[in-house]
Length: 278
Image 1 (tube, rainbow, N blue to C red):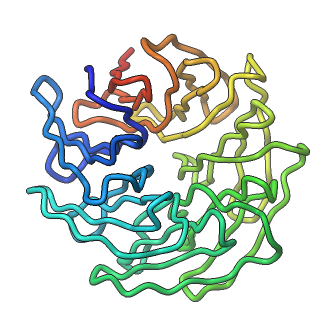
Image 2 (cartoon, rainbow, N blue to C red):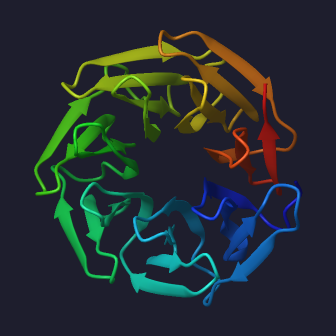
């Protein structure tokens, strides 16, 4: 499905549509597979919307990394924005609020559904917290891209970090897996990682260590699916580490989601949403 612009993040909304960010054009898009997309222009349009997630309020929440804003868009297109420094990853928390990473500020933030913002500092500097997800243990788990670690924060703000075994792994995407563990991708090392809630880490090398894995999601088939930004491909990893790769049309795959039709949908920054089904 061709998109006028550069899709980056994508998620299935509560209305059965795909919602996506159009990063370089400052837009949010909505499309039901098989229909024409609706595009909502942000104002200002220079914020570079990146990651998008479903909130507990039935709205879509997204980050504008460059613009320093977190946005909320209802399923009928009403937009509200809140000023926040350098937000990147965002997810719904177990407390009903949205939790987000502050990439340049070494903080994990929380925003209530009415826009009240608070944040928690991380140990050290320059760690670049990136993606974030709610874990099976009632905490939030996140990647530290330059800290070369996985982090965990409770809803009370207690932080733990777990260094990765591989130097320079540079983790980015993270998701909750089907096995009560967290799964993540290492864009610097070309690996997929698994961390259980006790902090034990396992790493699985990808066939192409230069593939630059970016985002990861749990599929409907009990496996993990990830985009390989550098290789322009999609990969599937079973919980015991078996890996398959699939070609994608276009270039620069970033976010991905399980669509309303049960297929894997990928946001291609080259200008498309691409569907994969086996």
